[in-house]
Length: 605
Image 1 (cartoon, helix red, strand yellow):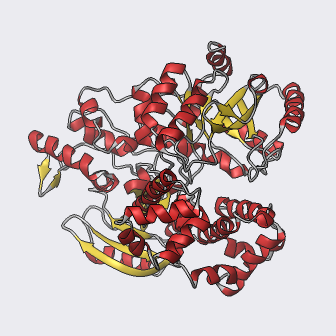
Image 2 (cartoon, rainbow, N blue to C red):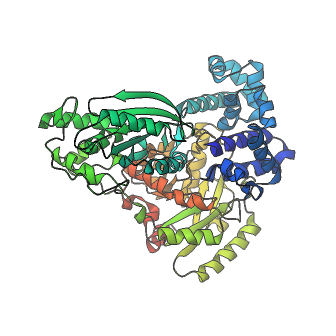
């Protein structure tokens, strides 16, 4: 995952450069280049080796030179200079915390901090840390206390994602893995299982269940071991980590060149369905199924016993599976007197109790989504052409899209002042008359600058078809201040929804301190929506908060926050969050037809 690694280095450098007014243009260039790198599914090494790096898209010359330096030498001198003083984790914490290099370097230098563990130890003395933070900032004691709390939250966040990977990035690697497996003649079929199959937003490893031709009708352990040996010789495998021989199958865990571990489980024709059930998980879900199976006499040798089940073995299917595992799983759930439970819900969060009463909801699907209401164009910091948007509209059969560029105070987002905004309104009005198959909505992502303070006055905001409220700056305030700020935007009658409500960006920024329950309550009271941001590093709101929104009757809106053409394809990631939270079509704002969407907005005017 070199693209993500290099993008992180560039954004680290950008964060350090950000505080100097002279470096504004360089910082902006690095931020744009980093996003271009991490959003590109093709490895930057392959692009470079093919000679295409000389024509980069939206990578300016200073960023290009740094990228080339890294690919030529394996490092960037500017970054290595930083690393000579501070560890990579400490450098990254500057960005993740948002506290800035002045405050963070002052802490590191004052307390001679060399690692995150050093910092955690020093945080025991809250008062001294707070004083240094206050001195490096506004000088106010309360600010020091607030910054200390932010520092703790950021450390906790870094710990929570250690060893984890964004699912979209892992799925890009999966394409190469699958192509290699297709070439092994002994493999009849395989399926990705585990947390990837349950569509978790971030994952720690890859699990693949394999059925070879030779494990039918009996399990051949020797040939299964040989198959694992053949897999070990594939180009993406670095080394064997461990292997496991069980009564029913064998498996092996490998370290990969992508930096993530992968486990291959060799199954059989006889046990394919039950092996898929166990390897998909979750463990808590399966444990509860086992207790039900024990009561019904379908449990033997420590596993659910499907020997007596009459099941379709899927003869004739080679190297692919249906879209979901219902084809194989329904018989197991049926024998346990349960309604079929989709993989996304298998977390032991009440889904089995729903299945016992045949009340598992009909979950939202991609086909239910009628449009994307958060897209950035070249008017601000997007590099999506109109043709790119039209291509995705046709691909997903959308009824509408909203072009929602940044507002005035967003320097790094190239925000629009009132004059440019009016020019864009005129442009969108012209587009509306050009396209008859779908509708283009005029929108804006409007910065919430403070309590009751938006980037545009109401007489401008009310001209928008879609008005989004969001925070991109000054989120080092207290929990109460951040909450009041966002709630005030929800209470503005012209704001339709809040984008990425917690501000989290995977590996780049910890969630800011905010009372999400209060946001949900305010949204319920004011008939507003909250966003599931589908961009693969945001995934915000998360499934836990989406469940709360559903329980409070608050609609969510699933958008991509697209800045690059392929970002619009990430809409499925947001749909996965909605499905994991048990959402149906009726719970989602942009599952409404255009006429219904307009009616929803009009009832507040």
